[in-house]
Length: 196
Image (tube, rainbow, N blue to C red; front, side, top):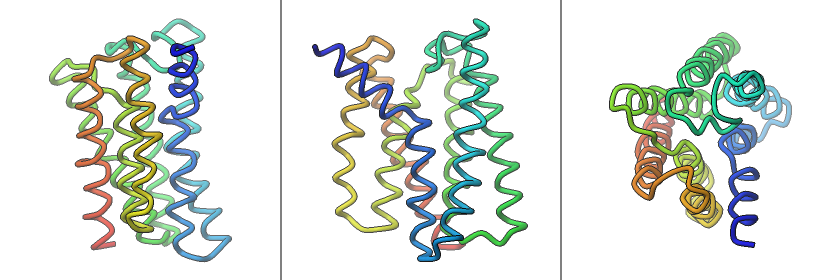
């Protein structure tokens, strides 16, 4: 039973899920339905859907260990793909005059990708991207909408626990991911949103 709960949390609260939903939530702060849909879609496609399509295809071909890319060495192509795709999306958003908070979100996602790549390949350490993305989303939504959104810490904690319970990460790796999500993901969103 415990393993089923952990497996469900890992799948339902996976990074790609947070990253598909978060841009629409952030863009909704503009109070313009069409802009919300348009810019939310650009970020969701370039930061989540396209990279996830590459990840699933690579997993099916055996290039890395599953659609969660649990082997550290297999993360290079997925992370580079995510960075390139998000960079292309950011160019579209800049040229299209996207709202500042959406640009701040893209910038914070890019910062998180750079830091996670530095940790994964520079330090050769397997940081938890599940934890990082979930906690970055919690902080980002609290910055945009206020402290009540910190209640999303409950599902973020659940997915963090699930990664350890399933043996995909150590406690240190999920704590590292949590710190990266709060400081780099959420912190850079907050800083960028002050200037954009």
